[in-house]
Length: 425
Image (cartoon, rainbow, N blue to C red; front, side, top):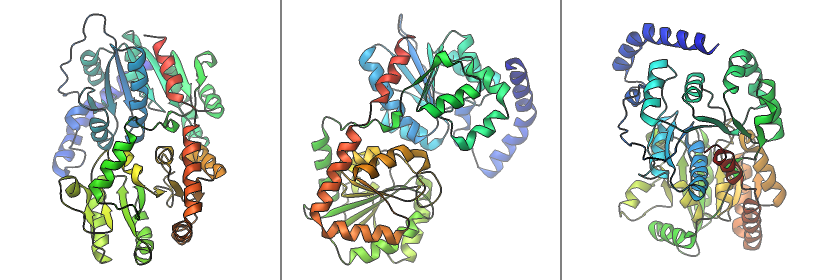
């Protein structure tokens, strides 16, 4: 199966690539990052004698954050490890270069084509290849295993919704899963679904969700003070953050902002999930006659002048949560499955989210049960809750404390997942 897949992908690439390249050059679509996906990357780091290198494959922003937690635990246990991270999306790569710093290279993942994958393998020389969640690229995984790398799947998840699609290609995925020496999955249901696809039960371990790991940084008072000073926030001002929003959530939230801005001393921050939507959102703001500041300009020492800030920068949301009183989790009013709410809750914020939190349902249920999270069915319901908490400071303080306590009680999956890796290094 592996040999057949390799031959087919290589032939299809060679036949189609010249035509696809012409389309890309003419249209401009997918032009950014194409050279990286073909293996033309500025990677020159030679492995020192005795040093082990770990290649981590992530999908996008959420998986890069998970990779950062994993890397920290691995560094603590094995200080002389070398890392390289690849992502499927430009957003993930750009975020990774901010989140991981200059010490850990971050590139776009290779196309799953034989000679391209070979080039990446020759450059990286991995001793371990880790893919997060369901980044199951047959050639990368197969070639890593054949070169002697420990192939490990972490934070593995397969939803009830997607299992039917995977089972249609069960022979291929069974062949892929046979390469893994460890499969760390989020929950029991994920373990069962991986077994259905052909994974060996003895390599599967239930570890929990690394995305639920939430620890305040040691310098968290300094982070909070820095962000408050940057945005010119006084002690009586509440901050509402709409984090990782998707179209058309900004448009749904703006009428709420316009009404509450007249009643309360609030600063609103809108943080779109994808920064290529910033100009679209600015047009909506202009049409609504809403004045706003851009966070990039504030970071460049321009003072804040308005009560709404559009965050147009990568990598700042996690720290901005430190100053929030209320947080709305984007991707939940429209059916995107929501986003990570634990990283906001750990700072002690009241959390609101819409009915579409299926990708983070377990964490949402924990927050609702603890009293630190509230599911709102509509912008009108959100407005009602914001008015209630803004008027009742005692209830706000209690809900904030419950959110923080629930977040900090979440099991540290990153530590367990790091253990799976260390035993093979």
